[in-house]
Length: 319
Ligand code: SAH
Ligand code: AVI
Image 1 (cartoon, rainbow, N blue to C red):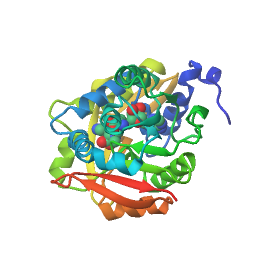
Image 2: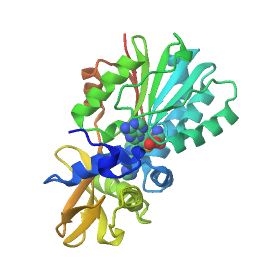
Image 3: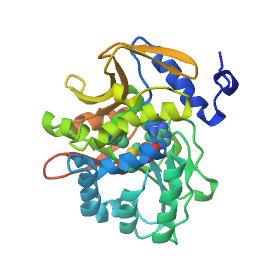
């Protein structure tokens, strides 16, 4: 049955979140899809995470983009349109665009409109000559690229290892859809986090200052703000574990007691220690990631890594 905003008594723009939370918390194994982390506060907290000592991916990938930027620019060629998936602050894009001689257009795609707008202001200031076409959309749904980019060749950009937030089948599906959107002859520059020792991984997702915990628990505040929830944030905790068999960090919101909460007038019970799954972050080996990309129809080519083998940046192409 299709639910309406009236049925949930929420603002229409909160309907998708309402449906997802009510569906996810009604399951035996409770979950909330990861994309709902990124409201204005969530995007701000993610930016704080990227500046933590423990969170190695951002600074490592920035290092790779800085060192290998000229090589990347040469592979991409002049005059391409850069299309970025989950662009957030576009901080890494500034580094990429600085290295490219001429860019036909930049198309940032993100689910958080506030982050898109702020990023656009900074980009316009630094690159006034690059036509900018922000797209506020869910990259898992059908997207139309702006007509204005015409037949410029396309370079997809998907940094951050956001691909790691997809389960394996969904990652292949996403990469195939991105390929269809970008078209034949396109390329995709994509960051993939690498498997590494457990202590580095756990600290990266459970930092000493508790910023990652705040990012996870922002979902509780978002439920209270947008869905008339009465959850007490102190009664829940951020829990990050590494699933060695699958090779991924798993993040949960854990209930600290037996409790019943109300969301949009509905009651949901949690037992002490019960977990709500809110994020996966898959870690790959280079061969594993190349196999995944190949399954989605991409030709694997150049791959760059740092000296400590923390992170990988892949240049994929499509005939
Ligand atoms: N590319 C940046 C940000 C990564 S954080 C970096 O590398 O640091 C993930 C970004 O993807 C956030 O900006 C978030 O708002 C966006 N995002 C998450 N799920 C999304 C979805 N389903 N559709 C579009 N954007 C999404
Ligand atoms: C956006 N994404 C790739 C981050 C990650 O590392 O999986 C999100 C994140 N969650 C907690 N810390 C960072």
